[in-house]
Length: 479
Ligand code: ADP
Ligand code: ZN
Ligand code: MG
Image 1 (cartoon, helix red, strand yellow):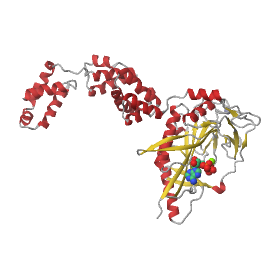
Image 2 (spheres, helix red, strand yellow):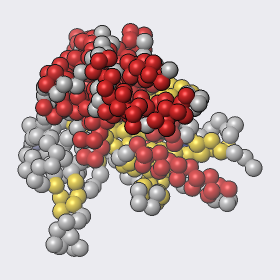
Image 3 (cartoon, protein in one colour):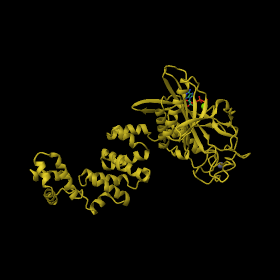
């Protein structure tokens, strides 16, 4: 029995974060009433002329540079002709024979092994409108059209068929998304369609160098679904071949509820798009100066930042990974680390209480009211032994709610750790008096019970006693 090797290449459509569309001044806002952001240009009225959005070009350049691509000095917009109700012009403006950028790629690590996934190209294009098949009283007979999305600027990023597992493909998509959001090119909102992925999947017997026939799974919009769709597709193709069948080249869709892909159209029904250069748009010429500016404006990228957090602050890879999930989170950590001078404590707190609170309240780091300086104040109180880490968690919650400083809260609520023996001795005496049996057991050699007494004294002090001092006092009293 031959064993099979999956081969996967992805095509990703990412919306560029511009205020207006790619060839007109209509807003790109998500969620507006249908057909309120439209004009003669994005509706394809006769005589209306497209003008390229300069901001869209800058964002596309930024993406190309961040992904290590070679930006082409000249690229050409072409018309991709097909009929579909959501495509008002009867063609989509896209780049075809001469795209904006070639090459590039990203490192993808899965289960400790790393691989470089090459990119074929990045090109600019416009999105289509949206067909609304549901939600109207006459939806059983009619399809409504919303053209707000028509003309939204996109980049399409095409990978080489370099991936060999569903997990690797999902990680690639995740990393790509992280970079695009990091550099401010895309907002990462997959639920709103800002980022969509087509997965090209084939299998071949291990050892064969030619590629098998691929099927393309269209429009997957989550990392998890992508992995599931590819896993299903690999299984389906192997099964087909094992039972004497052949994979046919076709476009398929993923049904998330069923966890299956199904055929949408075969190669025979595929369109001939009759691409030709759009006569309404001049060649896009990227001047060397503009490219240099875009390169200079590029922020430190996730991989570099991860490496620097490890060397500069001595953090483990685990921490560096988590802290670089977004640029804003990494900024928040670094500000806390430098304000407190306690990088590891800052990392623990950001990964712990801060992320936990964000998740609980479903807010991004930018909406966390506690500033890095305020958090640093709390970390210093813990470091100095003024409060225990248990008390510190409550103080953090109060800081988050009230906006007051850690010092203020500890002071006004009398939360400072008590190490004064004279203040703790009465609690110790009371606990010993209440548990003579436990004291006997400890004296008889049951050391385990000692922690119980420490716990009782901590409780009596409402968590404020310094556990070290309590341990000393109890040891001395029991003898
Ligand atoms: P098409 O002509 O069908 O658009 P392309 O050659 O342009 O195909 O490739 C589209 C995507 O499919 C790319 O991401 C590419 O890496 C991937 N791809 C091409 N051939 C295969 C294959 N045999 N198996 C898996 N992926 C493939
Ligand atoms: Zn418009
Ligand atoms: Mg293609």
